[in-house]
Amino acid sequence: MLILAIETSTLQGSVALMRDTGLISEYTLNIEATHSERLLPSIHRLLSDAGLKIGDPDGIAVALGPGSFTGLRIGLSTAKGLALASGKPVVGVPTLEAMAWNLPFCPYWICPILDARKKEVYCAIYRFHQDKLETIMGARSLSPQALLSLIREPTVFLGDGLVPYGCLLKEGLGDNALFAPLSKQGPSAANVAELGLWKLGRGEVVDPASLVPIYIRPSEAELKLGLRDKGG
Image (cartoon, rainbow, N blue to C red; front, side, top):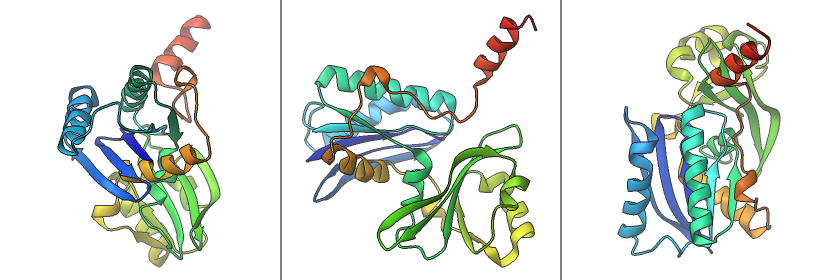
């Protein structure tokens, strides 16, 4: 089974191809350019370098968020378009869960954090029980201070939320704050592909038309619309 994966939750965008026998290729780019500029060229390059066409994968996996509202919309709309054009099934993978897979078999709590702006982070807490990932705290939006109050044991943090809040976490948690290596900090399309393969094998596919992002909180546009509806 072959799957194409798309990850656009943060500035670090990536695409990957994976079979159930292993990773074929992954292309990752972390630059100041919108995903609308680079996603389709990245997919074309990925398939071309592997000698494959868009109709060859058995399915498409896409990161659902939370993360950048614009990035998620671009990723999901691209996955929907490719699924409709190729007739292949699509599966959605939560971003923070896929990030936790950067650290398999880790004996500590794992806490992916993404900068949610407005002095908050998107976060969740996981742990591995042998090769199974267990959720201790589901995805939510919190202030860094509120997150600090939830950490009771050594925890490995990863994600772009460490750029603005890493020092705060270290000061507040001391030795309980562990940081993943730089190469394991960001979201990975390869992880989305691996989790997507499992979902595809279990038949956990979704109708492309019903595929929606995990936003956690309303977007600026939704907040402004709500204020307008209330006469604000």
